[in-house]
Image (cartoon, rainbow, N blue to C red; front, side, top):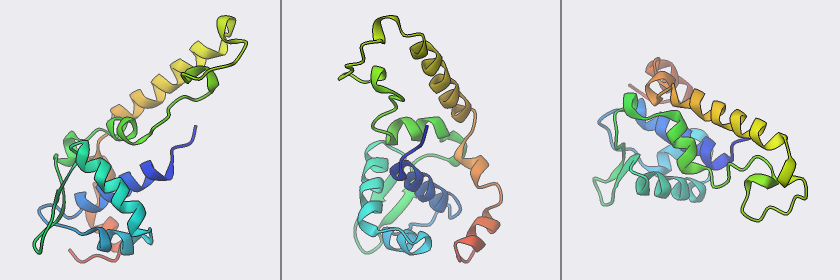
Length: 144
């Protein structure tokens, strides 16, 4: 299984905001810190805002902030909200045309694997990813 860049970028945005609590950050600065296209990040931030993970405020004093404390933001929830297609193989998708589906023993195995993957992510929060905020800030060339 591979997560999309969209989810990767979502995690990066959330990490960036988590290491700067109480400060409004801009898409531009996040884009520059990671070397990611602003257009891509705008799409990611729009979804994170719609899903209630980020607060976005427009205007001269606007910017982005986490909508929840990092301790409440489960990694599994981020993946579920950012991945369009968690169907590991064709038989997981509505347009399934696989002839083996009616008697395929692979389906329950992969379903349990996906459940285990998400269950493991659900055990962890954004707070765990930023336990060393100063280290993260140094890597992103941010001042504390």
